[in-house]
Amino acid sequence: KLSGLEYLEKEESEKASNINFEVSIIGGLNNNNFRYRSENAANIISAKESNESGITGYTFGVESSMILKEKYSFTLGLEYNQLWSKLDYDHTKTTQEQRSNQLLKVWVNSTTGDTIRTEQGDAIITSATRRRVVHFNSYKRFSIPLEIGIRKQYHKLEYGIRAGTTLNFTTSQAGRTIDQELNIVDFDKRDLVVPFNSFDLGFRLNPFIGFKYTDQIILRVHPQWAWISGNQFDGTNINTSIHQFNVNIGINYRFK
Image 1 (spheres, one colour):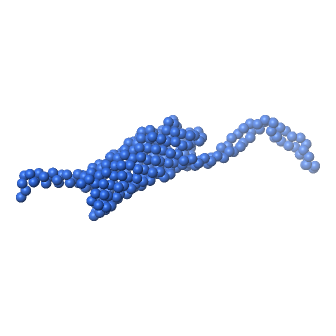
Image 2: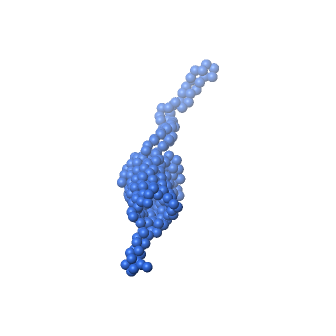
Image 3: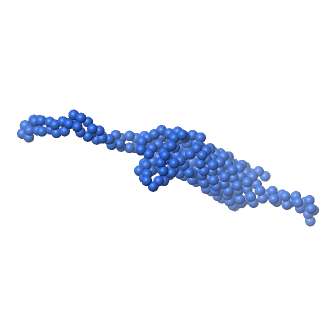
């Protein structure tokens, strides 16, 4: 039979064991997919989605989690994202120009082949110019994820899913893109043609699977999808959104 003091100590120990804390170091690869939506700018959207694509970048960061009853989690983190996209624009532009003193007609003797007379005047000359531009665009962003999750454990294996919002801060974005006139333009973080706002909110899903290396060290793999609200493109009614995909690896330390 436990004394009153022993009973209270046991109760406090059980309560403490229901709450654990973890810190994690994560790193991995990312890719992004820009999406555009408008009711009356199909040509611009088609040109951008056909000629611009995300390519692989990288992510690293730290996380802190509170675990309740070995089942529920609350996570706060700080991440750095280096994102890249590629502009591969192959365009043929047709122009017309009026020129004077152009040869319009020639009369030829059908028997001898000699030129009888010519006619000159103004003419519309059509020319085609082909231009191909390949450029890699850079975006640097910090993200603060706020997530809740659920997990299960089977022997040394654990798995689960987290979901939540992210506060995103763009520190740099520079490159080339297509503007609303279908011209190639340079941009930096101050221009209207950039895809990201200086600050935006996102939503993401973060499933994971992990292996308990020791009671305190856990190795996890995190495939991740995030939706981010982007900039309104080039002063038009075209709304931009970004789908970001990550595969991260985390090393987690659990405090006892």
